[in-house]
Amino acid sequence: MLEQTVQIVSNERDTDLYFRLVLQAPQIAPLVQPGQFAHVRILPMKEALLRRPFSIFQVEGDTFSILYKSVGKGSDRLARMKPGEELSVIAPLGHGFSVPKDGGETPLLVAGGYGMAAMYLLAQRSPQKGLVFVGGRRRVDILCEDEFRALGWDVRVTTEDGSRGEKGLVIHPLITELRRSTVGRKLFACGPNPMLKAVGTIAEEFNVPAELSMDEHMCCGVGVCLTCVIPVKAADGWEYQRTCTEGPVFDARQIAWEVAK
Figure 1: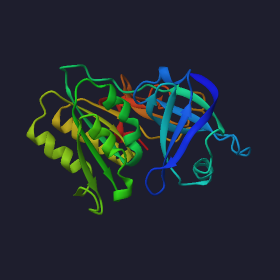
Figure 2 (figure 1 turned 135 degrees about the vertical axis):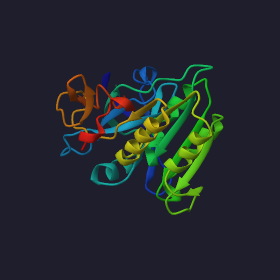
Figure 3 (figure 1 turned 45 degrees about the horizontal axis):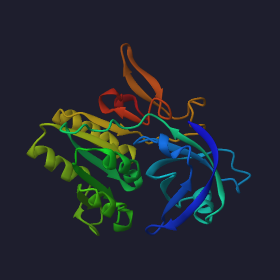
């Protein structure tokens, strides 16, 4: 984990409200593991004391990139920043995904919206190719489809309005696939919490292992403030763990959904 001021290489619109931000960070980039995140402070916003967490999308040479959506004051200001401007970054942070082994379990990646950003490095560094299930409300919420296909992965797309791929929720084609076979499969998921809970339930029902990148609000990002905790199973019932340090990736069997927020 390093705290550095980094320079923007590019900051371009991807689809609709989504942007791709590339940062020059020669000391941080080589350290990044799949599923880790960066905590970003937008320096021009003097009034904004809290950083914002973003999954690390791609690493190329001495740069890393993030995908983000312009949804509020902070991300709107970020969307207007230009190459050459600077951001304060703490990265890489968190406990990431386990990279599949060559000849091991076939990975099934499940992503909702820009949950795809957290999955790309996992797919890129996995010697074992698999399937990617990506879902969104509309066509413009489907991100990185071409990048995953370029890696040789089978991509299955769903949208709630039917504007791209199969109409419905992303878990529906996942269930169809698991009904065909569960042997030697493992699930990896990132997206909104209702989707993650559904994937955890499906993993239990079909008795397949799963790793989930939990989506919780963060303040400090380094384990001090305890605002991002989730309940996990323990010997005497359950206990809280921090998604910024013990997570964001957890074994689905750990999570105490019955007491989760």
